[in-house]
Image (cartoon, rainbow, N blue to C red; front, side, top):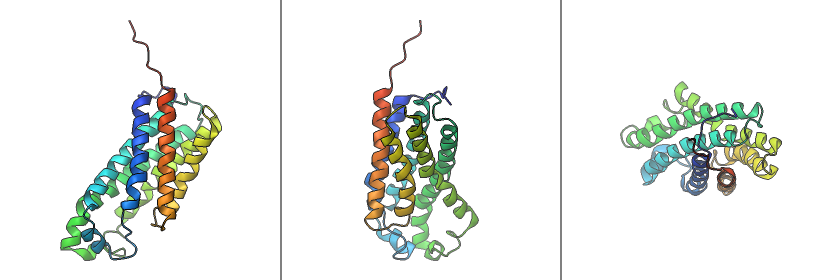
Length: 211
């Protein structure tokens, strides 16, 4: 992993932008547990663009995670590759879910709303559940990388600890749409990624041009 061929500065920007979008968009995502899902989707004019933007978040987070590993030059130990693989798997599941929500949910909300019920055939289907389980790897993978970074001490432990804590907190609070606490967890999780983006950008140095 110490030879991972990535642009650290591009990864730094990707991770910072990902974190900013997470912090900025999470408060705008309506809860699907208070009312029927089809009703929520129909009434949310931002549903499709919001989930399209979320797809971008996951892709940027993966690029950022690769740079976070690279900038530690192998000092993350086993937590480096493990965290990156978990993030990759999580991004795959999360992108799948977000794409379905962006494209299929608005259509089904108008034509077959019963399919969007939380106990309906779509949400309870094995593939949808599997994608949801895989999606857990997105914040958990970043949390693993944060733990590895805190232990490696290439940087100060604080940003690594914050990423390690805020990832699971985001899952536990923002996932179930816990009022106030869910939004705060998203802001902290996003801030942790922005912090790492800044650290990576500051640390990266242009490579000399070979003659």
